[in-house]
Image 1 (spheres, rainbow, N blue to C red):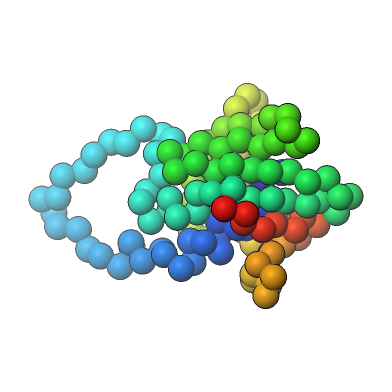
Image 2 (cartoon, one colour):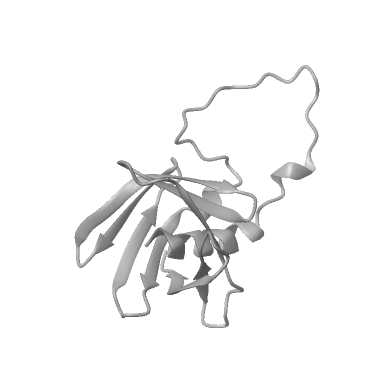
Length: 132
């Protein structure tokens, strides 16, 4: 389910991913951030997304600016964990034993939807749209 969010976040990030354009001085101080913290330029991907699978199941995913996410189907939480960006991909690490997976997205269509592209480079069959 997280694959739909990845795509929406990628579309959002494309507009605001200019943070890598600046150089840092040697004497800049680095700060260790908690693992779930998202860089300010990536926080623009935070929001609520709706993903509709090929078989019609609708999942709502809440991506939080603190690097956490939750997924809901029919009002019931089905997954939660942490997220981060890696280049053009959005990676989700669910709580528990499931491994992190990274997704990208297709071009955003005129109606604001896009298709999720899985770790294997193939479309997942999910249509995603940002709802807030």
